[in-house]
Image (cartoon, rainbow, N blue to C red; front, side, top):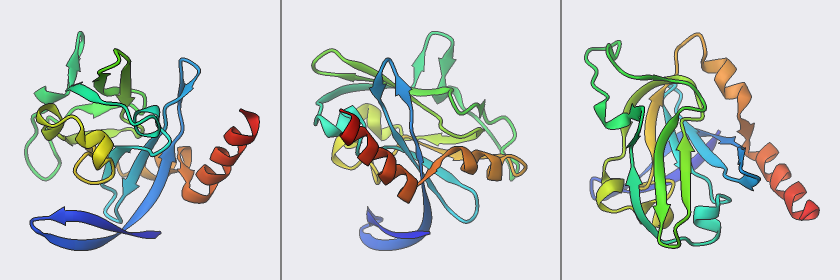
Length: 174
């Protein structure tokens, strides 16, 4: 567990004890890593990792789309304690497509199998939040993994220490 200070939430700073896990992905021969922040109640917040080309290359984001042909995350409607009606997503299910001013596009994925609780609709109005505040106001989505899959899903991700070791290997291999 690591203690993170979240940026201003409801006009006051607060700290939350959360876990830190990385989803390392290699799509189209590019490292497009994502970050999964986990709370003790199993709620996962999916973000863009600092090593993702969006942040590493300080891209200018022009749009974030939560729907393409065949999927639309904005259509997610659920009710009740059991989140009846929420979209169930696989770890590789697309959450959104990000378009940059240089024409590059990135498809950001769910990273963990679970129910989609919310997507960050603020990214449609202010897409640069993905770059400026990737682990706070620029989060992608909130996912609730199924109780029976939670441990399995977390084992598929890298710990902060393992992730840092992988980044060092990348530097030595490039």
